[in-house]
Image (cartoon, rainbow, N blue to C red; front, side, top):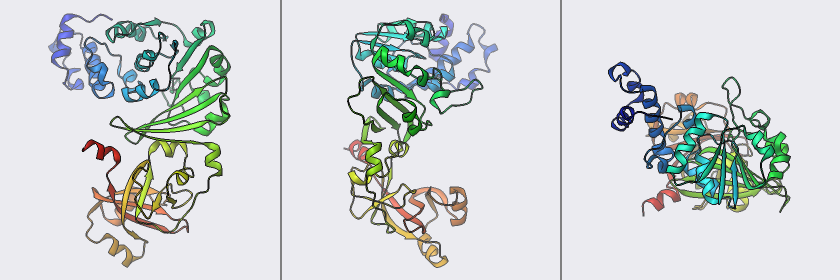
Amino acid sequence: MQISPETLRFIEENIRADVRSLALQTKKYPQVDMAMAVMQIAGRQIAESKVPSWYRTEGLFYPKHLSMEQCSSEVTALYKASLVEGETFADLTGGFGIDCSFLSRKFKKADYVERQAELCELANHNFPLLGLNIEVHNEDGVEYLKRMQPVDCLFLDPARRDGHGGKTVAISDCEPDVSTLEDLLVEKAKTVMVKLSPMLDLSLALKTLKNVREVHVVSVNNECKELLLILQKQSISSEVSIHCEHIVNDLHQHFVFTQEQERISDCPLTSQVEAYLYEPNASILKAGAYRSLTQSYEVKKLHPSSHLYTSSHFIEDFPGRRFQVEAVSGFGKKELKTFLQGMEKANITIRNFPSSVADLRKRLKLKEGGEDYIFATTLADESKVLIKCKKVPSVFQELQNL
């Protein structure tokens, strides 16, 4: 990729500019390749928050917007890198190279495979600037897999978009199809890491693939970002361990369980909302560790389908949002009037409740925002209630304030 000195200078001078506005100024700067400038400026702006160590590295080139949107963040790439190590590594779906750049540092030899020539050109330019010695292969990942020598670790991030641009959520709909390649993958590597869409049905994935040893459900700022499957031919344990990892400002919440533990765990239910209310983080909700939570923390579940928990005393390390309960109300007219007295706005959440947030907000005549939180939910005795509470600062926030 060649960028003229005039275009490079324009990029540096306009790095904070609105790219949509710049795109309309092509005639004003005839010496500038405006399409290239806009692409690089947009890429660097995304990288500043998404991949800060790349943003701080001078001279890197960036791809078109879609590749930047789909690439991993630095925080999730670092987490993936913490899970593996060895001598040899290959990334069969290189893309922009974020994951490869972080994973490769855990190995002595690394190969990047990508069928798009433009992305390979970027990788060849960027990797040396990042201090990485990675061999770049411009070819199809499956063809490379068939003839490659065995390695310690393989990484795949199958494309999760169909031919019409729609998102896919089943393994068999992704490209390459890991379900058809599974036997070959575990023959070619001691460990295979597969990154999948957070939309994927995890239970279906575990039924589809027979060599999964670990699952990692990764969330950042309470938004589920990735499902990671670790495949190994030699089984250490017949049980698949499911790791729920929640990352906020580089601080981690971690919860581990198995499907068998979830199946056999007792789960105390209650129709009585106690002094504190808890909402599990996004990783736990995605992984389905609903019953297992009650075995690790002294909480009761409000309803089999509500996924809210309560306790009489404060559980400081509960992996999720924590609230102090102020009032509970049914929907009787007088009861509701007392419950809402003095409230003009609130943050409303629906959990297993026959109404939308918008409809309930209209009914309660409350604006959005403020320090009050209202959960509309169903209790174990099937009664419908509103729970008013105040948020208790998380462990993350408390540590940041020290």
